[in-house]
Length: 262
Image (cartoon, rainbow, N blue to C red; front, side, top):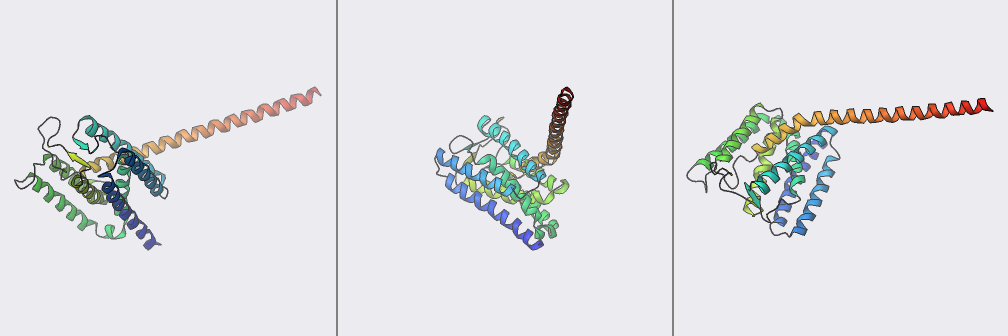
């Protein structure tokens, strides 16, 4: 049973990485109509994977998707920190953020990952630090100060976060999709932030650090959202039961009155 569970988590990681690859490859030359198809297919895959998850994880993914979508439209469409090939946020991107989060979560659940947590944290920390230092070096294609900041955030999350292996998984998945997406031209990062002061690599080295904030938002907001939903549902059920009892009592009273008149 444990082996079956481990295999399911591996399948999820492979499915996420595989779908990222296929989607970005197709999107590199896709028309707007084909992008819509990719978006629908990505939503269906996300919903299918969520079917086997707990209510808490489903809400966490919903929070990540909502938070990430706001970030996408703010920093891509609004501030143009990075721009997509067709100058709009593709429809596969919002559900794609949910897939990335699920992929990182699945990576953290694999028994091998849990048994080697220490080594994975050290390895991921060293990798993102080295990547960030390269982005600040004279040998980098262009300076990457933003990537170094995000790399520092990621290392901090891996050291003190509540779900440290999730951040390792996020580093693997996000770094892969950023390298593939920028290489194939799905999106391009600007050279500087809107102030013109912070240099940005293409892609930023520590892009996965952003998912640390998404995960933090999910961990904080999801339990509150779930509790709120349960309270509202309980009150709704209570109101329905009260209405039902009131109707039954009214019907009963009318029946008694009718019998008395006879």
